[in-house]
Image (cartoon, rainbow, N blue to C red; front, side):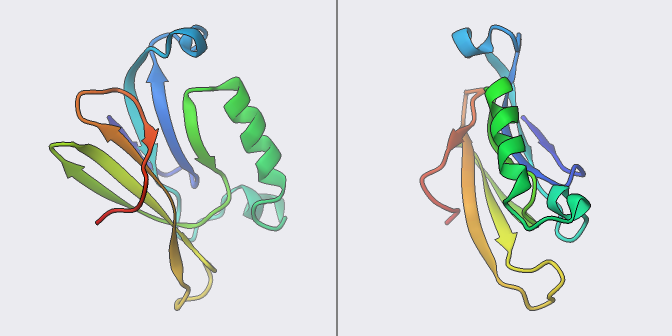
Length: 129
């Protein structure tokens, strides 16, 4: 399992041994969970477009070409909460209502987990307890 950041976007991915055959084999040797930025510019900020507009087609095309990428959000700002237990690892992705407002609200956008003994990312049913 790899935990990464500093690319100003949120990701949850399987890491395939052979990316070209992954769609057929599902062969994943590890996983990667990436947290987004709280305030640093990301795609919508760089393009000066409203959030969750131009990036949606980019995300869809990227996931279609890379089926090992299970979650991708190129726009939202926020933070992640990671829980490590004997049952596995789970990351909750929280997004801010406004990155420029010190009193901004945060909400859980999605949550992904890696069950113990696997190298596969799956969507979690809910947030962390």
